[in-house]
Length: 197
Image 1 (cartoon, rainbow, N blue to C red):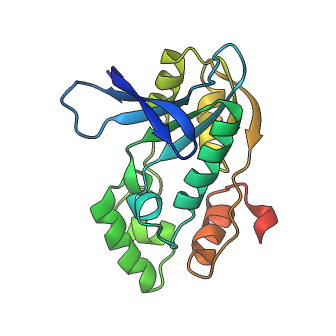
Image 2 (image 1 turned 180 degrees about the vertical axis):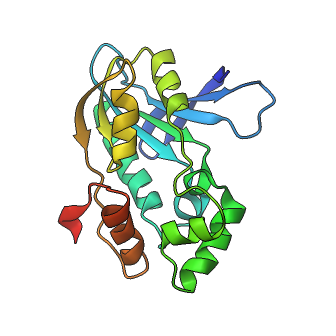
């Protein structure tokens, strides 16, 4: 059972946050994280971003995806509105970094992101959002403005006790390196990206 293990104040370039680590046990090396802004108020509808780990994009600024730019935009919005960013450790849509790099090689040979995962015998999107819902409940969040383009996140939360007041898009202008990736997300995965193409 994923529970709150530890927390500490973290000053960032976006403002002051309380970082809370969630895991099944206190020895977990890769806990899920909640970045809770100092102006957070659970009695109000909370701006929430559920962000799945993307080491290549978040940490190294890879242009193959829009993840790092979405993270930056989300942190700006969360800071502006006293919200929460939930950072889930499910790299590569849940397939892990090693498989993600293998999938990139297949994409370089012509597969799209879906075809590459299928080629490797993996799920198209293995991410789960029940932990994010549990984290929000631990923070006593009852209603949210959800920062996402992903219909799966909307559906997962609509099935939970948490009320979605609005969906806030995180639109990133495509680059030549990620145009096909974003087009696949829009056309084959139903992400809300129509206005960028």
